Image (cartoon, rainbow, N blue to C red):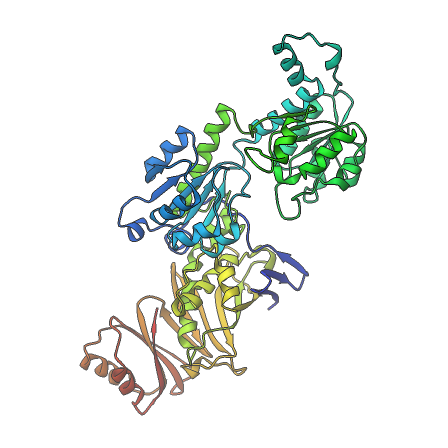
Length: 599
């Protein structure tokens, strides 16, 4: 058998497949998929009845949303529209809601998540940019963040082109002149865009649409995006170039980047100094991308002939932002990129669908702080999700001394190539099973990695090849715990690790190995494990003890190393036996040890 090992370190949140020396991401978005019952239970689903005493979840809409989106939300839950709330007012009310829907006007801060006290399950951002949402805090509190990235793509691209052409032909200035009773043709001579070079800075959804429209206007289009595949850019007929080349060769520079720590203030004095004199500058992305003082200096020096901006660092503007809006060579609009009737309704519907889906336990394609897991993988691994969590819960009960678990090795026996087996959701559920029973943390798919890091839990993963059918993605999952004493020494391997193994049989999770012993235990209800000598009468003796204490037995099974050798007897029980009962079982002469487990 072949094994491919990957190590996941909670302290750095990276998993490295050492056989290929590649890493794969832990968090960004999830594909929308309706999951099995087990997966629904362990994902970011909302049990609204348990949380609020109401059959419907409560949804707060704090910024104006299109009526079509509100209609969808109202069909699923109780919706309150409370606009223009102060931060204090929002924090005072947020604990009443399971979901929050915002646009750019509401800041969703760490303080807000703290005030929600764990009830808030999903934040929906109606639009693309999510710089007003503290994603790290959302992740820590187990709250899914979703946005609506596609609905306003065309509207934003159209607005970018509208500003570009209006600026090139001095439309705004000429209109103002006409309204002032003037006829100033010579003063408002513009420039043609045909044959000019347009640099699209950021080649995502909006950037690529702007590029297509620029080419339709007869422009030569180049693009800079460190994450865009070159073949994808070339397929649009656009050349992918470096940051410096884009700035130095363009007649028009159009921004379509996300606002991140690395892009904030990217267009500063140094960037403008690299541009050709007389360049025209468009920003319909995010205001924080641009150092507005630097843009004013570039305008005053003539490096930038004209600018057209739809977004500012402060909205509505004041101070320096206001000075930029008042500059005679600047066209400004009040963040209208997505402001078409069609886009507003489409954004409202898209975010409503994402929020409702998240509350139902479906995993949205627009989730921003959860693993990228395809619908096919979700469907295939669904039956193993409960197994992974159950094994984690069994493992933590086997550790003696109350120290918990710090290091776990997970072995996945699978007929599939290691690269074709995505185990991140299984690892998250193992984390859930290990941590929740011994802490007050509520672990889900969103925050599993963060909680593991907090608890200093380190998980290594090994994928072991088998010859079974590839239709079965996972044959078994084995957990090996090192550096911990065991409450049931029979779980120990020769290397001193606690070891348990499970598989799925007819859709039901089963414990199939304890230490070196094979067992067949359905991971439901409760079980007593006894390490014993395999001899006649053992089942009867233990059954009599339980019967005398009114503990009902649901099943018994024995896994042995050989005839009349050592064996593991598993006894399913409906009630939890008290300590005296377990002590009496343990004192049966042929029983070496016993342990009770909640499954």
